Amino acid sequence: MDTIASLFSFITTPVSWVIVQFHKLYGALFGDDTGWAWGLSIVSLVVLIRICLIPLFVKQIKSTRNMQVLQPKMKAIQERYKNDKQRQSEEMMKLYKETGTNPLSSCLPILAQSPFFFALYHVLSAIASGKTIGVIDQPLLDSARQAHIFGAPLAAKFMDSEEKVSALGASLTDVRVVTAIMIVMMSASQFFTQRQLMTKNVDLTVKTPYMQQQKMLMYIFPVIFAVMGINFPVGVLVYWLTTNVWTMGQQMYVINQNPTPGSKAQDQYLNRVLKSVTSHGEVRGRTRRNTVKRIVAKGPDRNDIERKFITGLAKLGLAAQEDGTVAKSEAAILEAEGGAAPKRQQPKRQTKAKRHTAATPPATAAKSSGSTGSEAKTSLEKRDASQDDKPKSADKPAASGSSRQAKSGQRKGPQRPKHPSKK
Image 1 (cartoon, rainbow, N blue to C red):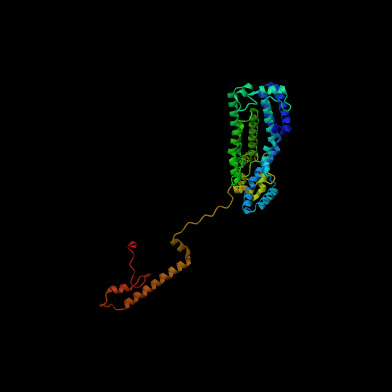
Image 2 (cartoon, one colour):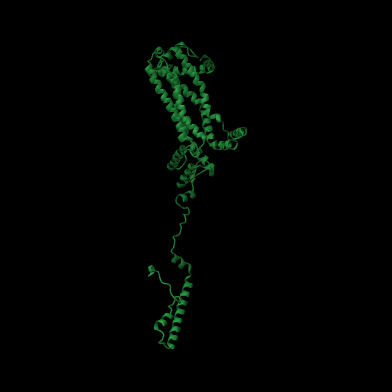
């Protein structure tokens, strides 16, 4: 332990100095020996560290998004050069260089705050052991050992023995109840933060192994924190719970204001922007104008959510401009009012008789019908005249003459019997 403490000695002194300065401020309000003074000093230390880490947090967000976008290309490279590991690594590095992506950027905030975490851990361990450390002298050490948070000393742990807890002026039951509640809250905040990232701020159209990995970490990290938490002092639990809550709030703000393209959060964000444009007739806020500007610059490469947003503006008679503003558009108004050409409908199916009638010209039909009628009339007159000139024969029956007289339009010879259904 002393060897590890010596490795972080360069940071334990600044951390102890910051805690002491905040303790002076809160001690004047709540009392020097109260848990509020020392607890709020630790919380203020977390806030100060996280404010300094905001630039790294922004880099982490950009790196995470770039990694999500590059997953399909990375998978293609792995499949193409699966038998050549050296070429695979070269192509990966080339891809990172072209896109400006650093895989380690996603771990920068955790790596940057790790020294402060270990320094605070050793400061609180020294307080529990009754040893001065950094700028914490003996009077401050005695004051810190008397400080309790809901009945649990700052330096007490869940696994401490009853004798050690009694030496700090507390009961083992109080210490274990307080530490158990803080461990559960710490694990729950870690789970909710990771779940919020996976369910709202991930491009749902891209299915890669990276998403499965993040989903596994969503369940693994809370378990790791729960196991490690039983060996953390109460002050360290306060530190870690505060930083988890800060991360959750910071991530929630980023998701609401700058969501990942193609994610559920982007759909909700653009719906809010469209609702604001409907109410005010313009895009309000520089962040929203920059978002609309990026959507316009994408052109045909927009995703379904962004195309839905552009269509929503068109229904309002507006069109997004290159500078992120909106303006009235006649084409958008016509499209919104249904000015586009209607879809062509298929004609109804006609019967065979109607199609035959439509295919025959009227003049030809009339001519043919007229000529047929005149020819039939002339043939009938000639046939009657010939029958009057010829003498009737008694040997032949009268029915034979009638059989020779064919009606107009009928074939000569024996007729085919009709089907019973047509009678």
